[in-house]
Amino acid sequence: MAANALSYSLAHISTCSCSKKLSPSIFSSPPLISLTPRRAPLPSSSLDALVVRFPSPLSRRFRHFTASAASDNSVEGEAEVEDAEEESEIPAEGADVVAEEKPPRKPRIKLGDIMGILNKRAIEASEKQRPVPDLRTGDIVEIKLEVPENKRRLSVYKGIIISKQNAGIHTTIRIRRIIAGIGVEIVFPIYSPNIKEIRVVKHRKVRRARLYYLRDKLPRFSTFNYRSCSVVLSVEVNSKPFQRS
Amino acid sequence: MAACFASKWSMAVSRSLLGNLSSNNLGSLGKPQDLTSLGYNGLFFQQQLRTFIQMRTKLKVVDNSGAKWVRCIQALKGRKGARLGDTIIASVQEAQPRGKVKKGEVVYGVVVRAAMPRGRCDGSEVKFDDNAVVLVNKQGEPIGTRVFGPVPHELRKKKHLKILTLAEHIA
Image (cartoon, rainbow over all chains, first blue to last red):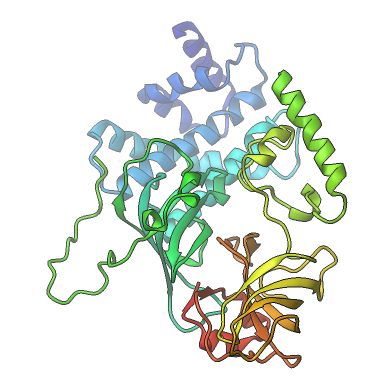
């Protein structure tokens, strides 16, 4: 592992002519190297282009991880903050390399990674517009949706999440609720720009990932009324975000 | 493995028996709901695949026109059947004694709730727990004066604005 890492770093220094900034930061940021063997076990005699190209998506992803950590104001230790500052230099180069090389599809790029990269980019772009809270099956949730057909105001949808389908940018949640005596299930893509707000109101302990059994149960298990905190008369408003224990 | 084969065979038999009427095939539905893989046919019957409203579909009537149940006899528009927001021709099966329609009458109806999920243009889907219809006349105006239960947004695009104004809740 150490020998591999050393040969990797040597290959970097010898081959990267355009990315001079890479070499000092490679030395000073060991976590980056330790990631690469997990991701792509390259022989030390690998091609120059591969070596140049591989750290770029990784470093870009690293930058985004740390950038989102910083934006969320979560304290994760100063080591990561330093890494963010150092590696912010890398993606400037890495992004250029990746952006330039993507249109002419050379067979050396691993095609299997591209959809994952595109999905991540799309999710990050939508997270910048509106951060999505951590949603799990069993959360009772309130969604404010802007519907082009219903141009007046935001429609509010409340209900319990009975399933979550992960599909990158089209990750959807299925909300069930009894409205006016009839059960209604609506599937929402959570990264949709139409959704203006998602808020977790409560959480119900459930022991499975898909709660389809609620369709057969009594309607009172899917009824969620008087739960919204939007109307404030004389009730103390709980302004803390919902914390799942 | 044997159970998987048995379920596949029984499904094939039931598919051939049902023939064209049920239209229980993937092509009509587009994306299969809640299926992990298309190949495993046994999952088809664990989650009910709801299909269109077609001939002999019983629908609940949710206005105060007097009818209680109708049976669809024709879906106008749609080769496979009617969906949420479409109009159908139906025959009244059960009616209240003093109502605007009588049993056996042939009426037009607008589907306001369907168990089959209907996709919207923003990628979301709506699905109700039952099939319900609002009786209308030939011009599309509702016969009754009240509509019970939730109705979807899709009616706005289909120009059934009167039903939307009468509705209790717009889902």
